[in-house]
Length: 268
Image 1: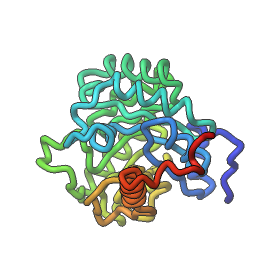
Image 2: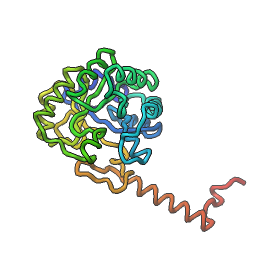
Image 3: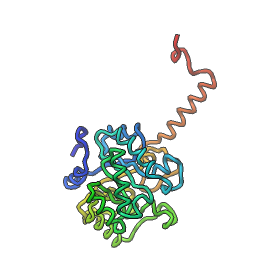
Image 4: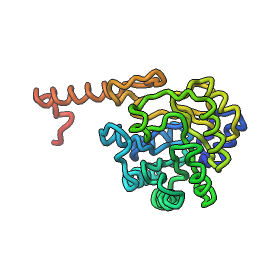
């Protein structure tokens, strides 16, 4: 079914897409230009991810990202978007302390960014929090499988999650608590397929194979802006870093050689 680029995507629209068998598309964005471009290109959802700590700020993990930083970037993205559903990550230690803390912080996100929903990492362990958020009319997207905020516990960023019984329990708990969608990260494709068939809410995969109800990628990765990062699940749709470097090198050379600006780029 073709995407209606004139109709804003809503939280109920995500559920409707699964019912209709239409795959959902999401990308991360952190600032106005890219958010506007992705929206115009027809993505269904834009995730303002705490991955900004790594791809924007150059840090080694997502852990240092603050709520104020997420709100700053979330407001910029939401201002750029006319159609896509904007979802903002709740960063580390802004929801884990208590459901009350989560509601207060998620409420700030929605009030100050104009985004449509928040995302938090967790399944069974965050079911009470998801329920409190849902009861406060705050749409929440869950996230199971690899949880980057657990990097210190796991010891490294990329650990494939293979415990099907635990993953299914996490997915069911998130759905029962009121999550409207669920990210599945670094899960074998057959387990992701089982989860997607077992639950009613849409699953959004990243490194979880083709059987999810939708897909999300970090935009910097799929556009070829992050050097040296080539996990198996990532398809690079462009090599913008190489193109940009070549353009800058040409600019530097032309200025140094006195070729730019020439008469065509000067005022009389």
